[in-house]
Image (cartoon, rainbow, N blue to C red; front, side, top):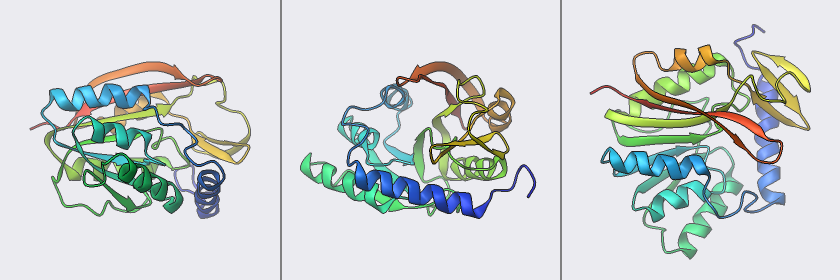
Amino acid sequence: MTTHEQDPGLARAQREHWQNTYGAHPGMYGEEPSAPARYAAAVFRATGAKDVLELGAGHGRDALHFAREGFTVRATDFSPTGLEQLRAAAQDMGLGEQVGTMEHDVRDPLPLADASTDAVFAHMLLCMALSTNEIRSLVGEVRRVLRPGGTFVYTVRHTGDAHYGAGTAHGDDIYEDSGFAVHFFPRELVDALADGWVLNEVHAFEEGNLPRRLWRVTQTLPR
């Protein structure tokens, strides 16, 4: 296995990890949206976006925020348990008509037409147990489904994080600790993923009690 090929066993294990985690801890991230989602909603509104695709939505705290802000939302995740929790919450909030869900593994092509969405959001999805090649392919898919002028906001843990280098090394800057694998981003990967885009901002921030150290990246597809 080269440093840019992923171990299929690791991918399966991570899927099982998240399925079990959502099952054991329903609504584990709470109901309040993440700070990046609040930021993204404001950015998307300023660009005139009407619909948002969220990748790795989990149980949906951010997808529900986008819906409450008036966007039509398509939320994807590879955990059917997380998506069930999202659909139930959307119905309870009267947002069922605004939120659609799709069970999807981002290693596969997005099941959407070209230029079919105004904005894409992914909070810590790109820094899951994905190889660099898989991340590049995913960003290529985001580019394909975005309309010209569309915006992509994503967050990733980076190599300045205190957990970088800790736990089991899987190559390609992926480290696993307590059953949870993270692909820590060097800055050059962020720049490479923005090739052909307008890179609007790379904002450093911290989240959680560890704290996790992340970048919030905003990039726009040229018209």
